[in-house]
Image (cartoon, rainbow, N blue to C red; front, side, top):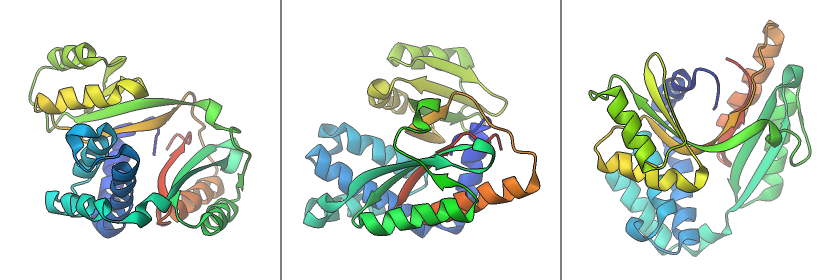
Length: 243
């Protein structure tokens, strides 16, 4: 999920992931299967989308043999092509904007579950495009300062030379922002340089953030986000709540 403290959110997600790795791995396995089918190859060197999903899997500590098993399974699984991408947009408390990206083989089930998550959190699903204009689709790479021993200026030049749009140094991390089309090349260049990445994905970054001060509003949006995180059909959730 995107927020002001991006790296704090990633660490929070990873802590949750440690308690629910099976669910996370299932979702990434689905992405690997779709990447193989839509990219037309089970060979990462010939499938940039698959390379990116593999990088996401590794950032989530998915074992290499599990990644390879999922790719191998997808190569002979005709059902993988039946997943469809559906994006939902809506509002949480106090006008917070939420985008939900799903991969599903049952459109009705997914729509019902997503709507229920919004409703339980005192929000509502809107029409396509109702909040996405408040976000920018960007490639985002986060490097944990504890994992990176090199020079910040050198890292910045490596990222910019590879095609990144922006580089920022935060208290405990570095953030590299790219155009979505340049993301694969920049991520690959940093990987080839041996730079460890805490997160690497194309994401939706809010242009502005909404602060919630009412305890009921905070509990409500947390309810929605937790329900969406627990849904196997939901791949990613983006919001502009300033946590």
